[in-house]
Length: 422
Image (tube, rainbow, N blue to C red):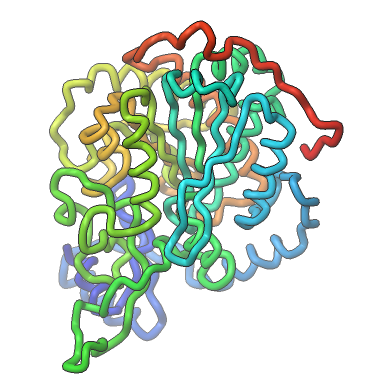
């Protein structure tokens, strides 16, 4: 691919992959004329989306600094919060809703941060709840997609009754039937780095190898040591490392040397493999493009469940649009851009989870002036519409694994502490 070659030559950085027939790239002033020549020679059309990305990032940073910090254990949806605030909120929610929720420590990242999840189900301490069918939701695998962890937290708040209180009966029925496990930020190293150092960072922070795989005679790098693996190319799927990736360790879409050679993906794989027989739904959340993606992602071939996906997709995008009028598009993952090593294909092909999906949140694919820097006033409506989309999705799960046993906990019995951290 011409663009990937230019990235390998350190002339540009791929900002987003192919969306709506175009690709967004970042080009520094020293490389601009050279890249223009390459585009013209290669027959590629181009236009300047913004001429100063750094200024836009700086303006966003200033806005966030002006926000009043929330108290420990509280959360808000008018700004983007750091990982410590997210985890403190999980702690507070579990303390308040201790009969229907518990924290899970899935493992650690390369830099030693915890990957945490919350498990929500009625009578959560009962061993029998482990026999309930399971729903898995994750977000934040790509660091710069800040609206995703925020949306995950809103979904958690909604299921626990802190938000969307008009849906309390539906949520109670949901946790009576299912055990729901939600990991709001599965790449906390990258997420923190995107807040502290490089706003548009995508990957994790593990050393990846030498630029262009060029090592010197002494075992070092001729040019520079690259950091970061694209964790959504690191799952074991057909054609791993061959589709929609680059073998340059500096690339935005470098998949690693082998499937699951990263701690962040391995700890999730290990957990989900123990739940394989109970999983009815796997969902991973990303931004941006306003899409609902179904398997396969690595090939344009249709799955045997394609007809089911068409019906599910209609229900999901209609539910989302009904909330605020924003239109999402349902499509097979490979229609956006074919990739191998993605998580929802792994869940489908390896775990055998038919209902395995990927959401791409706001903005739409043509909003290059916004992209990953979604304005803070869109956090809440994005989260709200995706609660509705998720409920519609759950209502359309294809296979029922089986009813939970009578003693699995039919009542919520949600006991609250005197303090209210919400």
